[in-house]
Length: 90
Image (cartoon, rainbow, N blue to C red; front, side):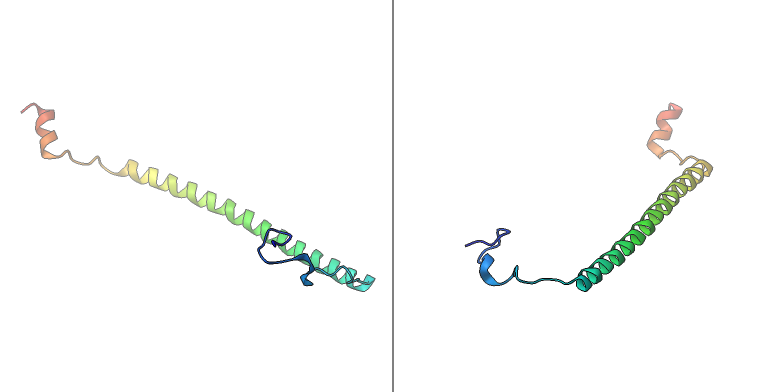
């Protein structure tokens, strides 16, 4: 028989989920506090990720601009011997 999530050989009656567990107010408050802390940490991570992503995009654009400027400063490459003779008409 498949389980509640389609997992093979797991039945609902295996004691995985016990509806008899009851939490008191203190336990709910502790769980709520932990969830608030986790949420706060996740928000902080998301802010840091957004900041890093923005800095990465700035760096990439700066790198592209530097490459463009570098290419503009380079002299054009010399033509290969075959193309030189064709362009001069020899």
